[in-house]
Length: 146
View 1 (tube, rainbow, N blue to C red):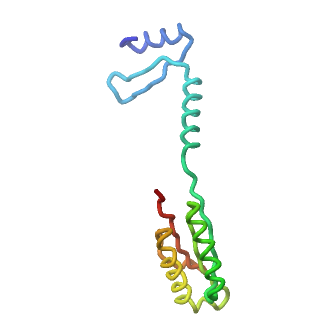
View 2 (cartoon, rainbow, N blue to C red; view 1 turned 30 degrees about the vertical axis):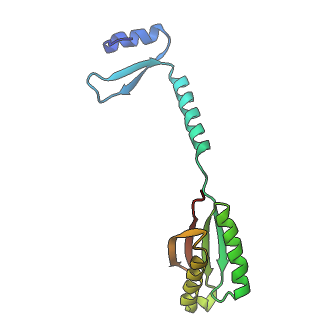
View 3 (cartoon, helix red, strand yellow; view 1 turned 90 degrees about the horizontal axis):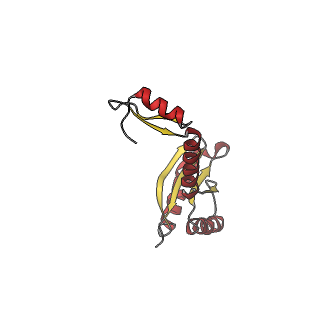
């Protein structure tokens, strides 16, 4: 392999029944390589697929509260949240305001902040409670275990 003018490189590629692929078009002179382009694409797809398989998938579990959730229900849902965070899933806790219960926005926020405080040792708050339409959302990410 050496440095050839474009016409000569094209002739070499035709002779070997391969493709002439431009590697670096901005260089002066442009850098090209003789290769089987379909095989190159296949190898690239294979590499991308392998990288994608190694990537971790983020699991998001949801827990729904009402603005007037009582203590027993709260504890029950909190235990589920602890289990989700221990399993390594992100947690989306939200208070759903039905009908006129939207007047209890402050109660919903207090409930979510209480949950964040109770789950402090299992995960950290990624997004503080925020009202979006009829829902007040909060995200909690699991703490890394060593």
